[in-house]
Length: 210
Figure 1 (cartoon, rainbow, N blue to C red):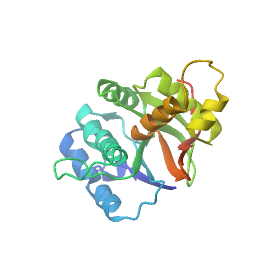
Figure 2 (figure 1 turned 135 degrees about the vertical axis):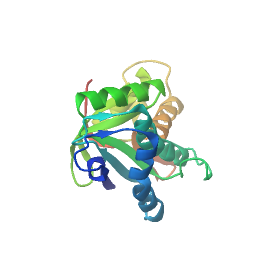
Figure 3 (figure 1 turned 90 degrees about the horizontal axis):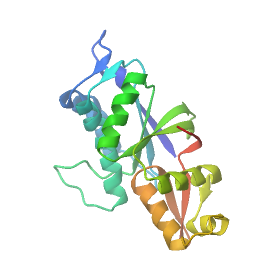
Figure 4 (figure 1 turned 45 degrees about the vertical axis):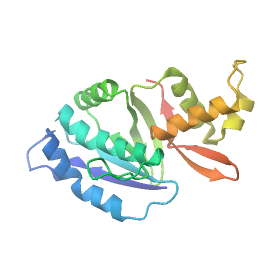
């Protein structure tokens, strides 16, 4: 699975350490969007890392036009929506952030929580996978618990989660499948077809608690 790192500081005027405004974000991501739209994306998709290293502050509008725009692009692909000129292009991408100061992280979390969205913050990135990450934003506790199971397994299926579940509750294979589908639509896991089943894979080797 490919990983594309977009370093925001490289787009800024020398000496400026903040990223403010919808228009600035649109300009900064224009080439990235063109590259993603034109490039070959395999069935597993591309992890797009927004690297905020060197950025001391961001505005809500910048986060919405950069991170949320990319999340919407991936979500529209997951839902199988048709492309629309007024909406983000549907692309099989998995947006991730890294290099966050406490102030930048706080602003991103506020935007994500207000929009009831979530994404991974990468703490360590390898060539083709995130080594460690934490979850930012708003995620239903049941989906959070399911995500932790996927990370622990590395790869899994709804049937496997059902077999390994010790909860003793009423959740069957269909229920697990629905949870995994929700995580996929939210761009928190990737998946590919294996026979009649979806094989779901973690984006990260380790998910930190909190």
